[in-house]
Image 1 (tube, helix red, strand yellow):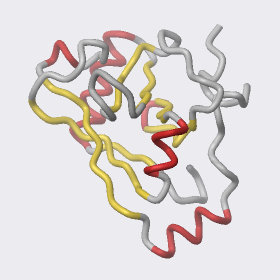
Image 2 (image 1 turned 90 degrees about the vertical axis):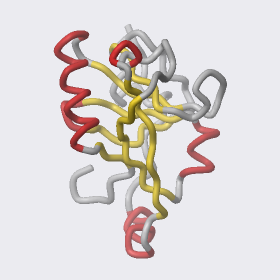
Image 3 (image 1 turned 180 degrees about the vertical axis):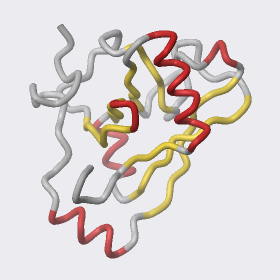
Length: 140
């Protein structure tokens, strides 16, 4: 997010994997829920294959123009944290694009600093899936 505090970022290793996945599958997106399967692991999907819900929150646009969405329920718990998408060895969900690679995306988090918290208060709230201008909010 230009001129503001970023809510989500990638490690170098995650960005390299993301680049590989985009070369194979085209544009992708992340979605993180608090639900079943991999719990709250970030899932990577081909853009357009996952319908963003009206209450889902767009945390940010990662490198390679990759939107990162989170379910509203999960966002309520994590709104005070900065999230970093990383990669570790091991199989995650079969639904996420990295599964065949023998690795999985995961989230590392830290609390926002006081200064970041104040800066976030000055920013508009993150877009929701109901906002038709948000990337992939309404997949055709």
